[in-house]
Length: 266
Image (cartoon, rainbow, N blue to C red; front, side, top):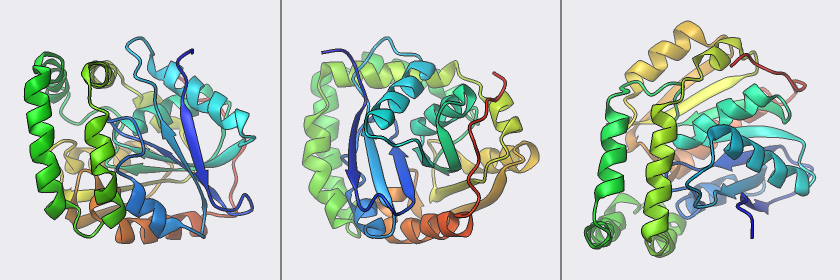
């Protein structure tokens, strides 16, 4: 079977469409509580990436477009979580999908500390799989406290951990390599769509101070930047209700402004 993006869709097609593009882990296993919090108010479409070692970010964007088109989805809001924000910028640059707005969740344009990314890539690529599995087992124990406000997310932790085999690890390292070499600043500087950002206050993975400063100075589409101080980098999972209410408010506020396809310079 060729490598392809998988989609799952929840809710009425008549509601605004919110498309979740996941972070480095690449799937929907940690989004359950956020999904429940937006249920009945949007059509929530969530993606899972293939465990590819060859795709470029444009390939990711093309894969998302193809999966959406197969379901007849031609427009909607793009919700890019962390690595998913890089896919969002590629989608906008391609100009084929009719984006109504962008929401970055722990997302960024160019990573604010570029030297961190190659180190994370080397660590991910070289960490022995047995060690990784032990770390994941520990993560599962910590998750009982980390996601205590997110029962659906907690229920998905087992599936999340179970997906991490050798190929999953290599795919994550490949995504880090894509981040390290990606600079979508020219795209963000040209975007006129509504752009919003939400992040947790405790985020050493993508320090938000640099992201917010750059967006405020350079992205003409930026409308608001919200920090949920009690959440961390995975803000949609660690503060699902607060994040959902904020995202829904933004979508509602901008619901009448639907922009047509556009192409940004790369």
